[in-house]
Each structure stands twice: as C-alpha cells, then as structure tokens.
Image (tube, rainbow, N blue to C red; front, top):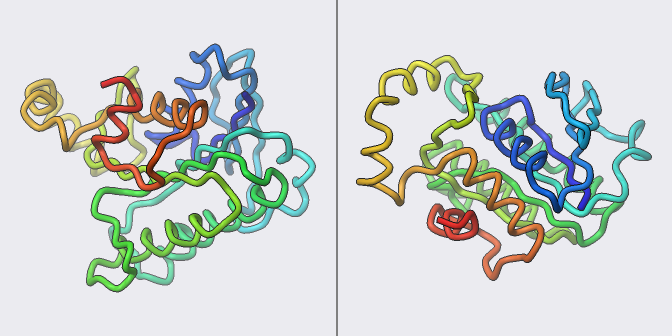
Length: 221
C-alpha cells in the first residue's frame, strides 16, 4: 500500500506517520507539507511544497496512491471565519479534488473533530466550517472517511505544536491513565488514530463519519 500523509509535522500527523512506518502492509509513505518532518525511515519520501492551495506543478508526484491521511489543520482560536475557512476548507479541498482526479476511488481520511456541525448552520464557527469541509469531501469520487476524535493523548514522545495544548498536557499527564479508564469515550491516543486510519484503508468501514467509539474499534480497542 502506498500512503500519502498531509500534516505530518503536527501532533496527529506525527502519530499517523509513525504507525505507517511500523505497518508491514505499507510499502511507501510520502509526506507532503511546507516543511520536512526530519524523520528518517527506509519507507519514507518527503515532498516539500509551499503552496497548499495549488498542486499543479507537482501533480506528477501525486498519482499511484492507495490512501491519503489528511491530518493538516489549525486551531480556530483567535481566527475569524474567513481565515479559518481558507485553511480548513480551502487547503483540504484543494488537495482532495486533485487527488480524486489523479487517484479516483482512493481512501481519503480527514481528521475532523468531535462536535462537527454537519448542518453547517450552527453557532460554533469551527464546527460549521468543519461540517462544510466534511460534506464537500463526501461528495467527491473518493472513499472518504471523516474521523472525529475528541481529546487526543500524544504517545511515543510526540508533542503538540500548539503552545496551549502543550501546557495542558503537562498539567494533566499524571492523571491521563485514570481519565482514559474513567472516560473511554472521550480520549484517543495518537497510536489509535494512526492504526484506525490504516485499518479503514485496508478493509474499509460501514460508516463514513467515524466518532470516537468507531475509531477505537478500528484500532483494536
């Protein structure tokens, strides 16, 4: 299986990339982003591409993939809707539309979020934009799956790039095992998300919008 990963320098993307390098079914994993990951692995190839709104000049490198794991995203904190939509909707659809043309029917997994608003009409800005993005992806000629994690526990030494999240992890790290035991429906790990993405690419899933319990089931608990 040949896999393309967007956002591999972020917390979720790092976890997904690590699971791809570990999985024997993945022959090649290619990362695409504005900067290189710095990861060294025999399976890994990296594409550094600055303009995430257009892929015309690198289309020759984007064909022949079985799956794309789209982990690119930003926090909506401090952003207005126009700016947030440009990244969340604009960058995602630019990639997905290109890939659907070059790899029709490929598996495309999008990291959305718990509470995403599929109606696109709610009061919460980020949820509306995520819902608009999900709906647009589901209309493309792709085997598209929307992953809606809640709180994500970073594993394997991975850290969030968001300063607020890093501080939060430091505070709650000592009690995370207890929280995961007490609230299993609220917390996933980066390992579980990566494994679930690989599972849905390898054997599909009956739902296209996956909540936390679905992701956990695909990851093997």
